[in-house]
Length: 476
Image (cartoon, rainbow, N blue to C red; front, side):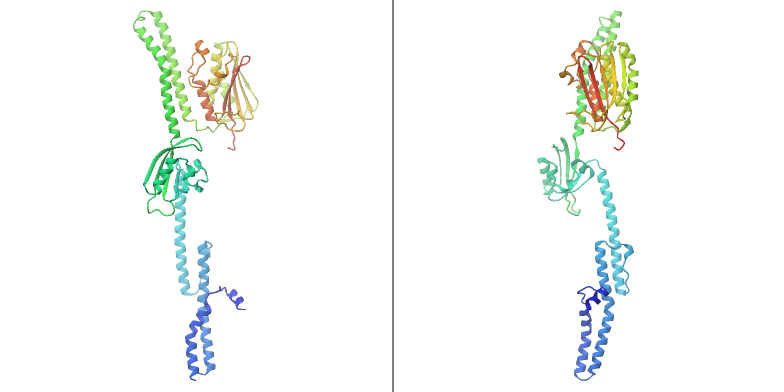
């Protein structure tokens, strides 16, 4: 019965309510016992009076004890976050009211602090995630506690489940981190190399966090990838070396003929006319060479930025064929365009696609046999042919092939056609002018588009260059 009453009233066990009532009633009971013992009070009256006192104490203590139980439950729910502003506790006793008011004020204060801290954390996380370089925070054991978006992208989403020595396989780097963690150094800077996920040259700055920082974090690591900078530096040095090498010959020719015009051919109009034509040809060659070198360097610099535009290749092929018709006629050649039905659009850069198609068609005219036909064919294919050296996109593609009826090119020479400044000896012997950069430019355009370029040459069908460009997917 008492258990049911306790549950009905909402009392918890071990509330010490009975002990409190008895404790408050004990002095009165002791007085009545003494008075009854000396016959100063009728025993029955003493019992009745004691019962009245006990009842009074129960009535007095019950509301306070009940509300203390409510406060206890309320605080427990607050601690678990199960109370919102609409569920605040309302009590009747003044002392309990004041206590609950203090608790509610404290709850509001810490709720505001929590919201402010959460907003600051979100803001700080957004700022860190917007930084282009990887940043990681580590504890005293070298475990990664936090990493920004760049770090998670570069080294894996689960980077925070790892120790720093599991991410970077570099003894020099690990030693530098250990020096900072062991407080042998306030900060360390070093350049190191890693082989995974790709070969990279990295610069790292490791620094102790200030003593006033709280939590387990003791150091922060920022990493900068020097790989791209090295590639750019190499491209620049290659550009200077190639340009100086290739320009030396035409400049020496021009210098020699200018000196001749100033001396022995000063009064020879026929020689002057001949020499000036040679100088003009060499100047045009240097102009084309410089233009191609600049174009190649520009394409290489943007090689990692893959184009995302939707491009229709059919108008490009038609325009290229029309623009080179006169040049083909000069060699008694015809350009024949073959288009399959329902050609897909491709993901690419329209200007660069035009450049590569025009380059291949111009080469077909230049190196094909006179009085033959050049065929430009456009068709859809199920996939891009695989390559050992190029990274290609999976899925459907558009193939653009350019065929001319020229002499067969041997397999060992085909493999070198896309090298910079490589030219077939036969073309040099025939005095066919060229910079040797056109196919190198084509290759780098294809790399940027994540496509492929193939070449096939035989004695009965001539030489065919085919470029493969990935189809534009609107769901990407």
